[in-house]
Amino acid sequence: MKILLYIIIISVGILSCGPTNKIVPQNNAVTSIEQDTVRIVNDDLEYEIIIIEPGFNAWLQSMARPEGYYSQSFLESRNRVYVQAWNQRVQQPFNYNPNLYEMQIDYQPFIDYGYDVNYKLYNYFIYFQLTYKQRLSSFIPRI
Image (cartoon, rainbow, N blue to C red; front, side, top):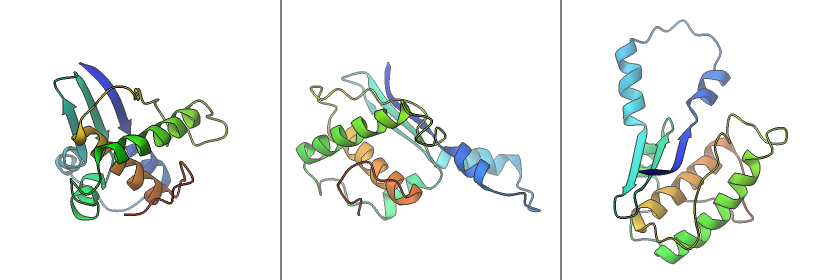
């Protein structure tokens, strides 16, 4: 199975936090990571997206527009723009935080990834921009 996108931004949260006196059992950490993992699979195309991002799953369920709100063509056009900007930033680690932009995204504009893949990828970009105060395009990220 080809992997379209694999994002791990847990390290940003760990690096930005100072020392704390709170002790968290190891089991809670694993459960938290499992809850914050979003796996999007299109078995017909053999592509998947794995997003491990603290808070994204909860945000997707509570804040994002519901599935069906946007058309697939809208999502595809925005994802093309966001992926291009993302990949450019991955290639410029001295200009952009390499902890935020770790891996390139292999998103081909002429492949139909289906609604679910495009919906969750688009919403990840919105979440990412709002959470980390980044702008990937001239589009204002909003919910």
